[in-house]
Length: 435
Image 1 (cartoon, helix red, strand yellow):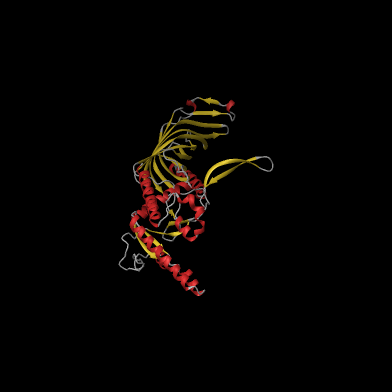
Image 2: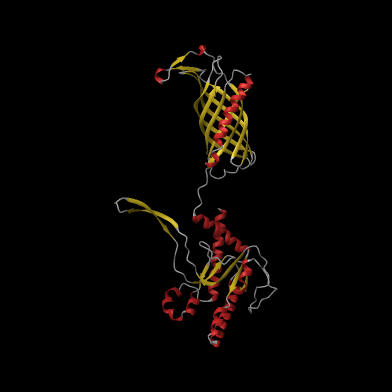
């Protein structure tokens, strides 16, 4: 009969708490930290005990009393760990109207723990060590409470109980849990703990800023380019040439074709002479779709701009492209500070200020990804090609004069400048990662 009543009480409590926990997945916020093998995890814990004592044949009902303490978990592997708790706990039951039985003491718990995603299952033993020898109080108001001598009622003795429980992650660092202490003998009390834990040993990582994301991304890109290949896209100017022919300017069309061919040959020579950061190949813009699809043969041209099937890539895993073009505006912005701005009703509000974004565009030798999307800072993705702008607009030479003193003015200088930028940035990334 004793085991039946205890089992029935335990089942009622278990069903109630399971029902409450079923609502918690709607509050959960992402997955919890992964356990690392042989990792120690420290937590602070607090909550409520719901205890029903079994004393002197009295009919007792559980009351809520607080507990607080610390826990430590030793992770054996990402799924299994051993957890121990040390709690300073108060327990109480109601005997009859206005009369409570209270016990103050320590709880020591040891339990293997199994982690499954955001759920943790516990099973072990619990040792309750009372320190007040059992106190009974009469009266509902604290000023009216009186102590009843211990010999008038049975006292609480140290008790070892079986422990079952589970935990669920609510948000980073926070978990809610419940433990059931099941007495192993008659004339012992059972207890349900419901509490919260806060992880002390490793806090949730802060959200990665846009600046850090870019720095991490560009570091990955420079290493990929170093171990990959740069495919230089050469223009054909076919739309312009065909348009000139249709309008009856064959000589002008030939002149455009000649200039474009000379530009492509000079660019190839400059890369052969001044570029050594990665493997490099050249292709005509007609074959851009092959690059997008990751094809790595049968479209590379030689120094005479003729497709040569013998030209293949040694490094085919990471492909980046380069070409002459207009720099696209960098639209990324970064938080700077807050300003106090007065509103129409003379109140002041904080307005965030940002920096970055926008900027003037200009002609450059630009590095892009395999899909011909321009890279971003801090990656050194371009080398200014002022000489190209001067070729297109010779009448603007006077306005370019101050900039000419600091800009590459030939194909060779442009490629050499880009090559040096790539080497410097790669060394910077290596130094940062070694620290």
